[in-house]
Length: 550
Image (cartoon, rainbow, N blue to C red; front, side, top):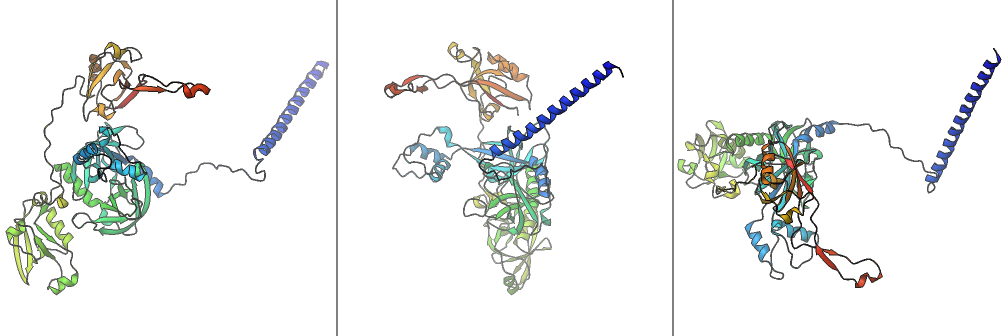
């Protein structure tokens, strides 16, 4: 090895030693610094051991799988309900100290609950409307949804929100059934939806797991679990077709219309009501069995309503001893006969005992109702009757329950009156938007950033524009980033869109002409005596109003 090779080797060894020394120094410095920082960080509790968040490991369970499977199929429903005429007149004519009874006004109840102050209140006319909310579940990929009738009843605007989406879809009512408190509504999302699986409620047993999914107190996608507590519960004797599944799964206001499912994720009922003394869940909830729901749903999508036969008699539950004492071991004792009804015309009387229909024995009142309600309206039934020990047969022609009990709204609900034809004004723009725009004046142009736009003069009721909360007086300056300067621009853009497209309006919403901004005086010692200045309000900055075309 020559001299130069030795020098080169020594140099490499020196560099290696230097790097090693620096590395050890850095390591020691890091450890010392960490120790010092730890000591500083735990100056309050130096003897405490810091907690460590473990690695995220999903536990998973049957309930977890069930919730993930069903949540996309459960929807939140918000319904806008106009105030009753009586409530309107009361709110407009009420004066302090004149005994205004506003117990039925939701706004007044809200104020009372939070201890609102008395005295006159200035409430805009729009506030006379109120919202009610509930739950529903998708049963068809094309947007058909089952919910409770009381969720959508009386509403003039029904909006549906899907899980994980901010878009709200306007729903139309396909049909309702007062006697089971069910309704079928439909939304158009222009995409296939995830329907639930329907179970057979006849297979449900007391003690089975039960899971409720819904929007209690507007808290969407809430999941609660319990068991089936009882079957066949009758809550209101006037509702002959409501025999509920009772569950202790928490059901609260807002859960109405949501599904009750078994551990396999199959819908076994529709959550409908609760028994409570506090207004919330106390572990006693009731769901309408899925087999009855299927029957009602199929009628509604076929005919738009539910048709049930009736023979015009009423009855009460009887003890087996009563029937035995009267010489029979099954049947239904007639408690009342509807005047001019089918049974009255056939000759059936009070205290007759109906023991069979068309040769099939009748065990009890539910059995009789099932046979009669499922019979086509206008069909002839043979009722076998025991009258004072004598066997007699009567031919009875069924009649539609809604017509037979039209004067008994507590049984079949109010008979709907045909809506008066409404002539809607033709919008200047395409019908896809539901607005009537006009060109801007010079003063109005000055309120826009780029001195162009159109003024909205009309927003049609029930239109897309109303759904996205566009208002009369808004100035549209662009649609989907396309500048708008005239009504023709709006027409052209509307014509280029199709149902299901997302639309975003960039809008200037001018402040009211008489709006004033109160400017506080300057800060400092002299502020107390400085005058307050009123200046005209500046236009609201541009906002976006958006949605998906129906």
